[in-house]
Image 1: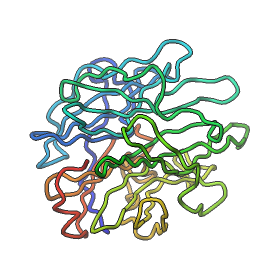
Image 2: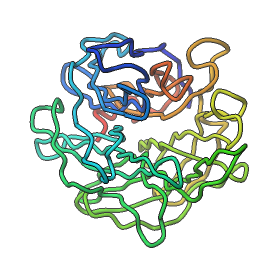
Image 3: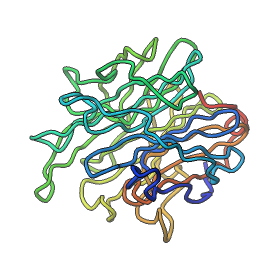
Length: 320
């Protein structure tokens, strides 16, 4: 696999008075005449909301429109999404648009807690209502810290999900940092999930946080791009996020080989220190990767195009 970067697409600059910083975790819904990209932005420190920017599908580096309102409001005090709504994965389902999102809430013992919620739209993905007050990926007996950063795939009546599960908080230079690994879940309806509670990818160092897997299927093989970092010097230093790669024949047993990721940081510029939160999507006969650069999205998001893939990957139609 080989990707060619097409440049930075969007970075917030105070649009509509509430997009103060960050365009984080780009999440893409292909529509007939546009690519609808959901992203997390920060009206103020400690608060994340989700906005929309529409792009030209023929040239995803061209912005058509930045929509004026957030798609959802945060939940009430004490809820899992009281302090943040961050997009994770989006799809069309039976005439509706389903948006899975990461809900954030601040904590006392640790900096935050985050789980995955579901919101539904009936107007093409412009406005949403929460399907439930609580999350669809929540705390369990085995997973107690977080479950977010998901990507999903529907095959017939089966829903597959790959997501980041928090495994521990560790103290680094006097600050608590979370460690998370990628796991798998299965569902028949996209709401109730059976979780295997098993780390899918081997760690290259211990501990090694891995996050935001993005999965497509090409000629019978599942391909996953994800981001990984170290627990030290990861805020713009040598341990910052990079894009990794793994493959699988069944979506459950994976072989990791980051040398096949086909993309890395640039020598200079907006994505020279960090590449994070990939989202791989088919658009007609083309395959794109949307991703964040420096500062976990503070520098905005960009796009790369797959130029060395199979004919199926390049002609597989709209990503489901």
